[in-house]
Length: 109
Image (cartoon, rainbow, N blue to C red; front, side, top):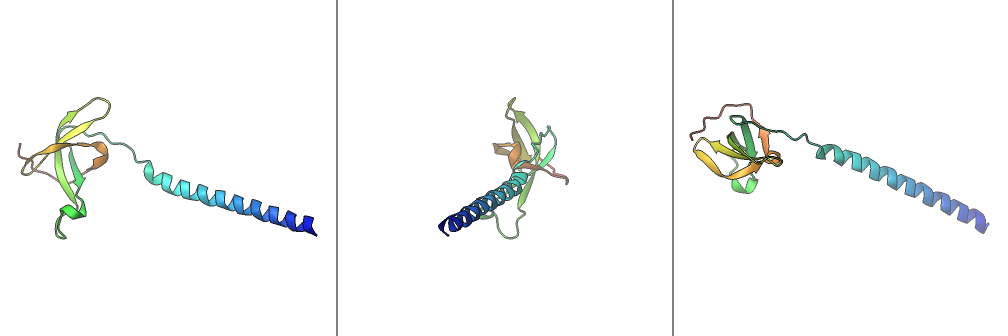
């Protein structure tokens, strides 16, 4: 009787471990597909946009700031200098911070 109970317990534990691994693999695949963004490279004159955090904007402001690439710095890791309607931004940005923008931007340099 004890051997049968131990056998049932071992089979339940093995099923539980298999189920846990299967769930972990499903979650891993689900989150991995979000991480594999294709890195974009931008050229001088391309229109891009930068995300603006909620804390830095009001409810009526746009969530993204349209810009134009005016200068590219670096060889392996590219940094982009951007300009907006009111002038050039002081910071440089990486490609991960930017997304392609399809509208028009009039940047005064």
